[in-house]
Length: 166
Image (tube, helix red, strand yellow):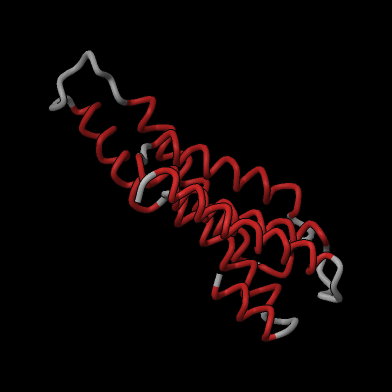
């Protein structure tokens, strides 16, 4: 798939998602609008990272930017996300660990030293760890899944199934 096809798929995906966002905010879901925004932001970012960012490259800087975006989105909503209970703190800790590993990997790597130096070996290990376990697709899916399970499944099965299919 080339870049144009990916762009068309993203547009075809985002238009219904934004339409659903509009419909859900004017619906009787009984959810705070900030929770609805988190659900749909994570869904749109999941599509964007899957179609563009991670298709062409994934590196610790991308993991770091995805992790920071999620932490900045979740931090002010701690009270609204209270229904997540311990899952909130578990997910925040996981994202924080991924961000820390990515940052440490970026700090440790030194192109002036040999690839066999201890510093570069650890940078490479942290790089692999955060790319495999902290890529944007995984982080945004985790956020979307938690929001879907804890907030939408309580409301109506139709909306839950529709969002789960997306």
